[in-house]
Image (cartoon, rainbow, N blue to C red):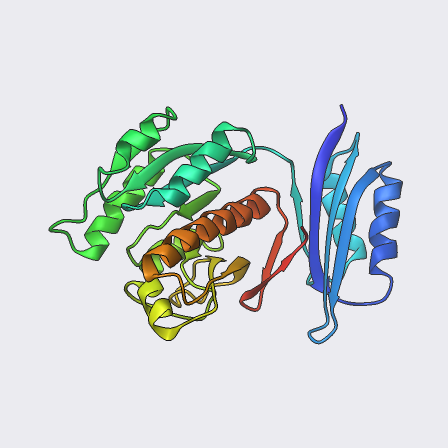
Length: 280
């Protein structure tokens, strides 16, 4: 049976890596359908993403690659499949709704297994797509208590690959983040770094900005400073009030978040040194 895999490699850079990897693919009788590579000369790092197909044992291929690559090499073989995704949301519907529509249209290599929110507001929207919705109210609970209940809700969906924060407006604890390292994708309402805190579009309007934007990033324990996956901007001018900026900005947010999620689902992201290498 012909297998299709994505082979992701990052390691210390040295001469002959592309040759060694390509020869290994050849020896296994693989067809290389797509290939991208990048060398970070400043840090001496090599990255390569290949899409290969053929009749082969992926464990044997990984073992052989380990023999020819530097000892620090990180090798990942990912079989294309719909990844299991949980979305977390609060009250705003634009990012959540956009992802649900793209999922329904078959644009995402994903299975959205459920939505978790701290309000009931979005339940009707989600249930139109026949996706389970769990409300875990934070009222009267300490943050740690609330997160325990959130984790129980997420665990009820079984194994998951990614959590998407579709305008989920509560800060996650380090304990929560560490459990899903490099698997939580957030959308921030600024072309980072800029305008943190409440009502960023009012802040942008008051400063007379000429562009507004959004940033999708992996969540880590430094607020809004995780590795950036995708960003987008649009021009604005003095004729727009902050509500018009907010409306335009929401369009950017949902597009950038969807792009970041798609990159993650298709195994196109390498993370290192709190930044990303993207093979789009």
